[in-house]
Image (cartoon, rainbow, N blue to C red; front, side):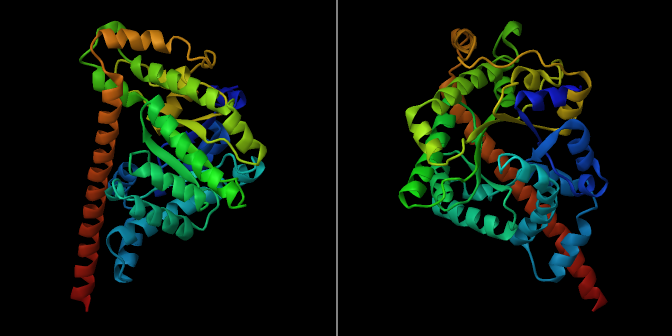
Length: 365
């Protein structure tokens, strides 16, 4: 039994942290499903920017949409949803057999809306409507402006993947927004079954402190932060508040490990995957990490529900002058800024291709 199947049998779901039209066309994604137990995927502006930059597979679609009068964000969203609908259809059997727990894909709202609560709510509703797939999450950042948008979107029945979470406190704020949305649905006599995941970013912690800590602490901060968050996740699921919601028919907002590819060339590629094995969670990973874990990874046990040695390790980082609360806020801001940059690059890339096709069509005319 390969390592990915072992994780699946443990109760952790493996999602791919990428999507390209080429992998849909050539059967690569289907092979990951069949052989490596992949049961979902995520996307973000950086992923689509790289996909469109590195493949000609999108050129025809961009040309057709340009000539049909589409431009900018509207063109991109339509282009992205074409891929995500195909992926959602591929995962539809998993979605159905799991009762809607698994088999999801994700589409991000515009990062330019990160500080616009009302705009985020409207954009999430529109993506959900346009997708026409029950197993598509709308990704909303767990920023101060994003949290009320998450609550409103859940209340409206929009499945949400909460992104850009970096700490236990970020996770708990996202969980609070989710539960408030569900509680409002119950009070309004609506179905409380609205799916959500909370995505905690892992490897960026270690990249941020690599030059500031001794060798024995390298690549340990992200895992410790994750251990702390996992303890909070388990405690929340055991709480009277959550049990009341579950009794009314609500489903848990699963904790999702994001950014689990190692960013340190000297570290094993599957470092975080092995450390974050835990039931009732999701691990979303790049292709390189997925293949490395399938080929060389080992299931070395499961995460401790009480956080294990997380607090002791975090105390070591504190002694080295690492303020994890301040760093979490910094990482969230930087993550949001990076997505804005990718979004702008993506739209510029599409605009350049659109202009070229429009110019050719004009000359033909």
